[in-house]
Image 1: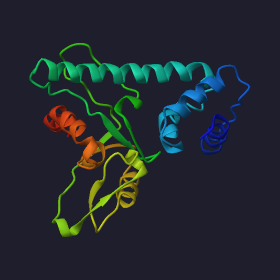
Image 2 (image 1 turned 120 degrees about the horizontal axis):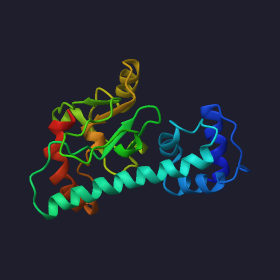
Image 3 (image 1 turned 90 degrees about the vertical axis):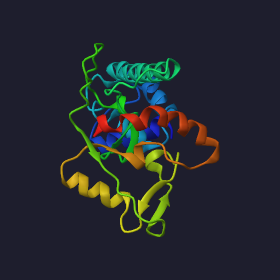
Image 4 (image 1 turned 30 degrees about the vertical axis):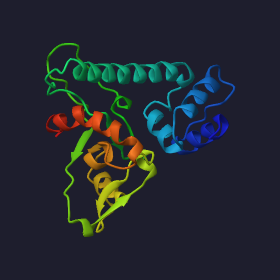
Length: 211
């Protein structure tokens, strides 16, 4: 994915007319390209604000805010594990499924207000949750998908698909969704098992808050 290709695709999909010659545009596009797995992920990151006239100026600031919020969440999770503190019931989920871009993105991609106090965090209003029902092994399949960067296989009943689930949720008006098997790291590659174990120390106890 090149900066020029990304610009053309974003203009086509979002109906904009931004130009590479705009001061700051190439730097913005280069950053999006280098931090995105594919066009779907890039689109998910910027679709809420790409249509703004001053996107080349405001875009880098918004991306910096996303990085800052994600870094803050990561520090808080590490501190919780280091000090073996009791998990706060307000720990937010790491990832959400953006149905419009059909990609799993960091929660911090969604604009929302955070609190520095002990008052429970209010999750973004657009966030829906879906409870996954397990079925017998013979009725389940493991799906490797670009939706989550193919980071782990998504266990799904053979009778359905992520595409079907997505269409149903979109028809009901959903935009951002937390689906456990898609947003919570699952067993997959042996090399990633240590990472999954560490994430689950934080993520599993906070599932109740997400729901």
